[in-house]
Image 1: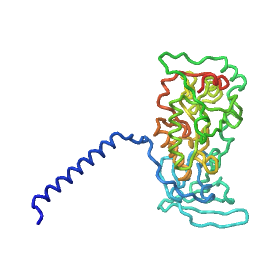
Image 2 (image 1 turned 30 degrees about the vertical axis):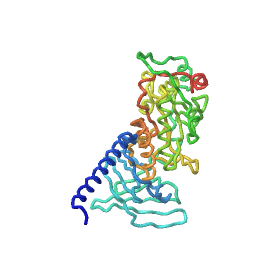
Image 3 (image 1 turned 90 degrees about the vertical axis):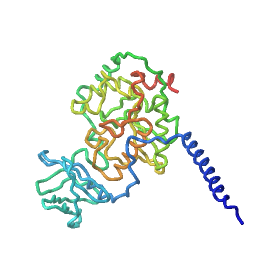
Length: 369
């Protein structure tokens, strides 16, 4: 016969063991590093790809007189017309007629006062003209789905040779304060998944001429290490980082400012203040596919001076927005902040602790690690 007191004793022993186990587990969790979260929300699972002809119907459109505008975007494989005031109207295909030289489509929103759109499309080419119930609309010049480099060019206010000579002869603004030691690191030496596409060393940039003498990219060491951590996050989704720019000598910032017309200065830094690029704590970048080595499509182009450059631009396709937002999520999780006017530009949190630099790339080998 079992002792009647043995059941409570066994129960107490089990509770003691359980208590000790939980205490140890809590202690272990307290000692383990807490994963860094990002101020930017995680964009969720990767959206499905859509047919090229559907993607080519997205874009920014304006009335012929320029008084009205709307965006056609894709969300969940459906096209949506978004008015300039933010109102959205899902549009559905009503009819289409195929002809030898293309296909005519009619779309409508399911509303009493419905939007009605009619346009012609040639294969997977972008739609350039749309007839609506309030008049014709045309695609904005910058809003070609595959990108138009000509839309990025600006006409310098003065001859570039003159602007460059003045910038090289000028001196950065004087700064007071105790700044950290310059620790510029060359990014391509840190991880093979970092690749370069330094447009400012070529004529493929908004000025249409090279402004760098070498295609290289540098960041201050803490920023470079944070970049590598962001890269590790992105690798799990099949992406590497394609760097367009990092540390930028001050004289180049002055060239950009002096060459850019007033309406475009929102996209360039004022040399009187210096830029975070000048301090080695800003990076311009995008994603590339690790399997194909090709850059991915974003909502807009690098260095594009248009509404598509804003980090919260609502247009494009679901996949384009997801990639843009994934990049932001990874970068902001590691101490960077996206610039409010450029989805590709990220500033590192400690930028104010470094002085403005003006050394050209060819003189950095003596100081870069």
